[in-house]
Length: 114
Length: 113
Image 1 (spheres, rainbow over the protein chains, first blue to last red):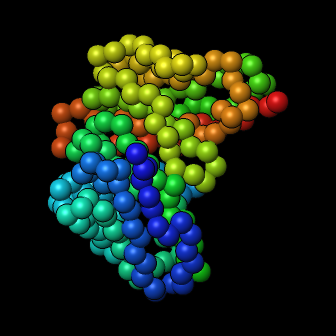
Image 2 (tube, chains in turn blue, green; image 1 turned 180 degrees about the vertical axis):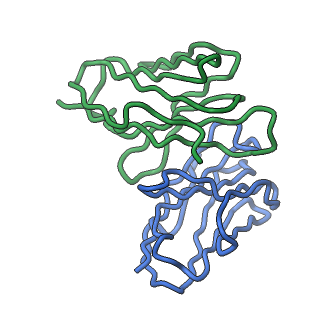
């Protein structure tokens, strides 16, 4: 069974640009969550999607958005990038909504904003 | 703010020794999970312990949970170089519509050969 796949693995952007990250969950998993990891703030929850609906959202500005497609694949978008958006963005899938069970994480997308 | 806090922040041990790390949290939980992260990689689930459980084992891992003290511990026995990683506890809040895992800051474990 293939694991969670995130693309791209690494990317460099400049301030003001936007970025789209992609996540393909484990086959059969309908819940996809996104987390941001930085040295200063640690792992912070961004949002969770289940069956194409956003179920929960963390305390991030509206520049951070996401969506989920009918095949459960998810994308997250960050617009008007700031230096502080440099982070490892982790996607996790689960068979259970609400992050109450085991999460399966991808390897992450490392974003550097210059 | 983070729900869980790990202690110590960093731990260095000799191969073959045991490693113990602790996690404290603030609110009532449904369950508590431990994850491992190798440098710059994704997180790997280690073990989940429910709020009505007190101890759980998985291979060389032993997790305890004390809900009265709002704390958990992770013990890795007979450590190996491959156990070098950061370890995070994560909690799922009870009786809440706050559907997310809250992660602690992590304990960085270095196993010396």
